[in-house]
Structures are given as C-alpha cells and as structure tokens.
Image (cartoon, rainbow, N blue to C red; front, top):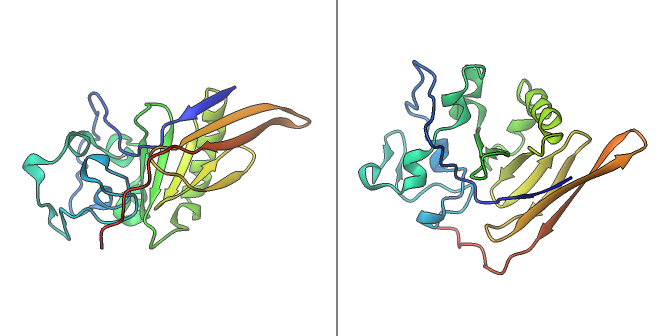
Length: 193
C-alpha cells in the first residue's frame, strides 16, 4: 500500500457540520499556521490581513479556501475545549485530499502537539487510519513530520510542489512504513517580514 499525499494545507469541505455553540471567537490560529496559496502565505507565519484579536481585514473578500475552512475543533464535538486552536497551539483539519489529517502547529510552540492529551489522540488517529491509507501529518512552518503507527518520521522541509509518498510492507512484528519526499520544481514562497 502506498499513498501520495497532497502538501497544500488548506481544506475546502463541501458542507461543514459545525458543533452547535462553538465559535472561533478571538482564535485566529488558522490565519497563522496553514499555508494559503491564494494569499502567497507560507505555513507558520501570520497572514498579512490578520488583525490581532479582531480577525481578517479582508473578511468580505477573503479567498475561497479561507471562506470554506473550519478546523476539526469546530466540526468534532468529541474534541474538548483543550483542542481549541488558540489553547492547544495547533490546528487540526482534513487536508484537501479529503483523507489525511493535518496538525498545523504554531512554530512558537513546536512541541505543543506532543503534550497530553493531544499526542495520545494523534497517535490513535495514526494507528486507526493507516490501514485505510489515512495518515497524520504534523506541519511546523516548512517542516513536516509523519505520525505513523510504528514511529514519528521527521521528513524535514516539505514545500507545496513536493509530494510525500507513504508506503508499507510486512515486517516481522507488523507493517513497516516508509516515507519519501518527491521534490517538485517550484521554489517555496518567500516569507513576509
């Protein structure tokens, strides 16, 4: 089994089902941690249109990925208040391919995802999803890790033009996973000052 993983970070769900009573409020992590190609915004830096504590300066004309985006905390009642991105310091969402999970971490808190109760749940998602070809990716700015059932693989910098391929083969104690990065030709967008 192998899967090619899309590296664009923003997700465009068809019709999100939001948890009643939940709201973004002052949380603006989705304006910082994911890559937004339409705004030439790299992962892990604040969007140029974000106004701290107030929201998006171009809210009425924001691009479609921003309009369609809702994090998993807004859609999954099973994720408690500790999973709200401004509290956890990362945003969990389904990648554009509709299969893989992305954990986009605030680079100021690069280990936030490894703390409990987060890490145990992230590892559980990795174990449950791998058999069906669903993988969990952790992005910390340009750096990416793959959370696999048997280990966490730090694959370094992964750019939008790159493809991540996860494969598995039988081993003496279960499946052994391999991760490779096929480098694309497009250079990464420059970070804004």
